[in-house]
Structures are given as C-alpha cells and as structure tokens.
Length: 69
Image 1 (tube, rainbow, N blue to C red):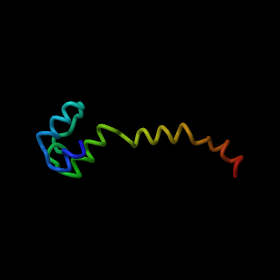
Image 2 (cartoon, rainbow, N blue to C red; image 1 turned 45 degrees about the horizontal axis):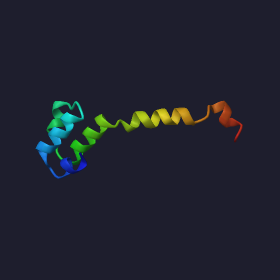
Image 3 (tube, rainbow, N blue to C red; image 1 turned 90 degrees about the vertical axis):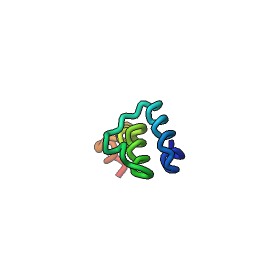
C-alpha cells in the first residue's frame, strides 16, 4: 500500500484500496502521495481508537494511582 501510493501508482493503489474494502470520501480519492496515504491509513488502521482503548485498559484509576504518589 505504501509503495503504491507514495510512488504514484494510481491503478495499483486503487486495486489495493478496493481489495482491502477501504471506503474513501470523494475528496480523499482526489489526493495523491502523503495526504492519500494518511487518509487510507486512517481508515484502514485507526490507531487513535486502538491507542485510546489501550490507555484506558492499562492506566490505573486516579484513586489507585494516588497511592503511588
């Protein structure tokens, strides 16, 4: 995916996006290079949601954390 988008291989990138079932907005489809890569990665691997979930799972509650301060 990275190679196809960053080397401006539009046909190959379009096939990969379709195979991965990534839904892009019409304005995202017009982008090229790094902006397109960011849009695709945001839809394909939403890291923000995963990081937030991991933080909430692993951080202790404020009451528990206060004991360590």
